[in-house]
Length: 139
Image 1 (tube, helix red, strand yellow):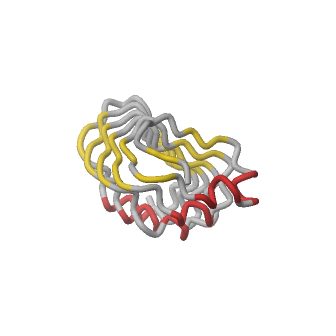
Image 2 (cartoon, rainbow, N blue to C red; image 1 turned 90 degrees about the vertical axis):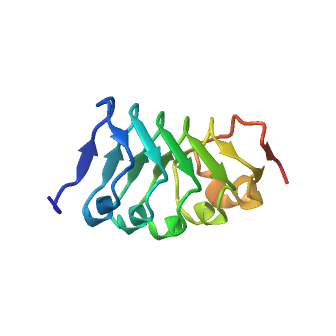
């Protein structure tokens, strides 16, 4: 199964945490686990998916902070963790990625949006940064 490139399990009524073993799918390019009842935090092993282009985890019940090491995902272009219960701050390392789409809305992030997201050339290439939450402030 290590040759798997697409994992699409949207709307499958999955419950429980995302398994840490997901990080072993090193050739995975697209991960879609949307519209389920996944709980717990996003496993740090997700940062081992060196070929990943798209991570879609929206509309679940994921909690905790975004894992550190997301900047290691240099091929990532779409990252959507909207409509969960994620907390903490938006990590600056997201700004190091060449994202086309970044969706973080309907979570419980606190603090400010990293200035580099709104000012850098990389952010200009970002098609969508949706921050529909009143817990964030602009710097």
